Length: 290
Image (cartoon, rainbow, N blue to C red; front, side):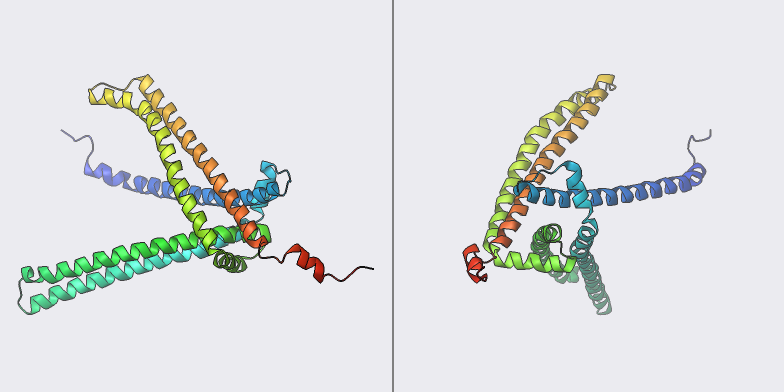
């Protein structure tokens, strides 16, 4: 009796599977790039809109998006320069560490084999090496986490320098660093406040999303666990519940992101404005008018 799916059949459809996987990968890559560009455009648009609304102007959604799109190339270059370099550095360091660890283990095993030692005698040194590497990796993870926070803060203020002060990428990074250095205490307080607020928003999101997800999934899951087939109502609840879950989470995150972006924009303006000389001193330096 012929098997319903032989190895020859798998070999024949393997190119089709490979083509589908490559197509899915290309689609995911294109979609990711499009969403990344949309995110940067929205961020620049929110920065411009927050500044103009604070000045008492009226801004429409289309005007904000056009303002964001006008700065998109500098926003892309800033992201690539800051986060791209950090990502490449982390990958390079991980590869270097993997090569070092592999070389150390191979050298220890070769030395033990050459001296006639049993592998059990090498267990102690290898465990010590592993413990030291674990400690080093933990320290490096903490260091990379601090570096990522620093880069994120620089990127946040550099984006505002690009949009609000029309600076280039390198000038915006320098400007962001100047603002952060001159207002380090206030920046740290902002980070701590938004860290606490992010935790609260995450808890609120979970408190809202978990019941919705449970109501959408539990009837179908209970039916499957009892050995029954899914009904049309179960599928409907899963689809509607999943869509509702996505909408709820996206709405909460959108409000939080807009609030955070507006707060950083107003903080940047406050930090840069307070470095200007007082108005009365400026008036005293002006030549008298006849």
